[in-house]
Image (cartoon, rainbow, N blue to C red):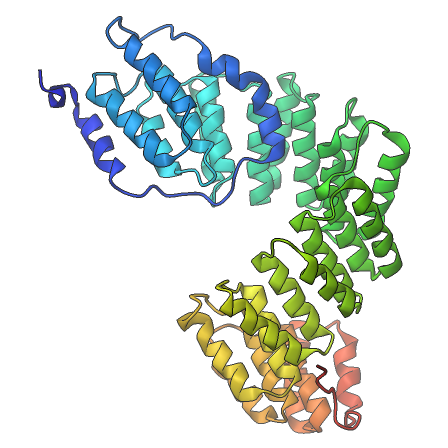
Length: 489
């Protein structure tokens, strides 16, 4: 019999889908979630099916599962799935669906659209496969379907387990959805999973991401068991939300109270970020020494944080030394140094480094280009600045943000083209914010354009009436020191 006779209408649509490129999400499985799932994956994936299995299809299913477990590319997974369908395995077979979805969403760039199509054929939901899909959604560009799938679980009388909740909480954290997150927290407690270390770690991260540090610390204090993920979640929450002193205090607490927990690269990045926020160069250098003891000195994320620390503290030579000694330089590495050089007055060196980055074939990010425009502004390179700005969309495929337009206003204002800067603001496709108007006010002060300064000030009064410094600046229009800022390098 021709294999095509076994292909149903839905199977045919799936086979057609194989020819297209699946929509990929941008993130891999996090370390926390990997730890949460590893303990049950083996048993769940090797369990025998209890229904929808026929003697004729079972050997084929076992062969497909064995192949899925030894392959690691989307191309191979599609071939295996196609082979299963052509040999008569039902599209909705729960064991095949479970293994295929898990394999797809374990890829570095999971093809979520393909996984959704496979999942939609499942006649009866099971907790493991639903958890896998929720995890995929939580890591995708749009985590909202994770919450909808959780709601569907309740409609199907399918009870979440302690692996469901960390993925749901992660989705809420990425969405900054406090209402849903608190609801999931309550459900985890009601269903007896609130004391799971994986659930509690996710809750600490969630509340920190939402800026509710007291709630995050309450969960942290109530934990019976803490691991490095726990400490990292709360330390990073403080470090990334403008509370660096608390982050450093917690690190010291970890060192004093938890002999079994050793700081990792993620911890060090949080500490270095806190030192950079505080301008604590001496403390940052001590952290740098500690990195060598832990063997983390060649961790690229840590090295990038070191560049940022030294640059923000004005230690440009040290930032450059870290960059030059890096074995693997990412776009973040180049961007950190380009911006660092620019903000410290080494504008020409910043632009030369950007040119080298382009020659090396790396594509700049939005932040890289802010640094480049800032460098042009501080060297008075108006024409070159506009050249780079025009390339943002045409050459790099990036839509300019308000920060880029603000740099252009600063570029014109510093060059004494204050009226052109004002016209540029009026013609911007984005609504100017306080930073843009404050930049114009600063340029008016620098070049004694009192009338236009009053216009900028009046706009600032409307947008930020409580900022008295703007009025003080208006009253003290004085010429800058001779020559203004000069370019170094």
